[in-house]
Image 1 (spheres, helix red, strand yellow):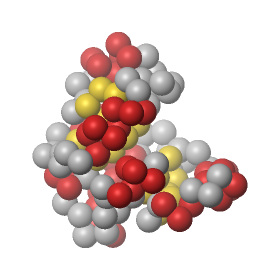
Image 2: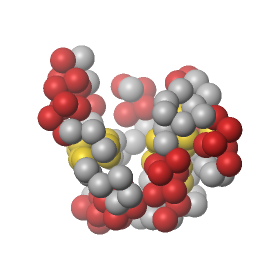
Image 3: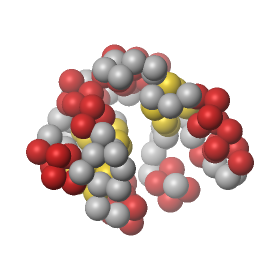
Image 4: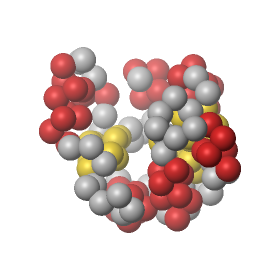
Length: 124
């Protein structure tokens, strides 16, 4: 995570988990200071709205952003917000189902995230 953070002006978490749980985890592992923000949505289908709000809050354009997720709804939300998506294959949904959503990046290992971190996404 520290190496990923080096390549980002704004580095945050948008999750459907409880914010307090995420904050506790990050603090207990000495990672909280890496993140510009931690934001949560309890809605299962509202992440695209939150992604657009994050862009406005931090004066970012969608082509400057990359959303990393492990669920089909993450990839769909990024697409709806015109943000490039990186689908990680070690999470909830299978590699095949994630690939079918055509994310900008299909990430099979954490090391691959470092490879794409320096690449500027051009929207999706």
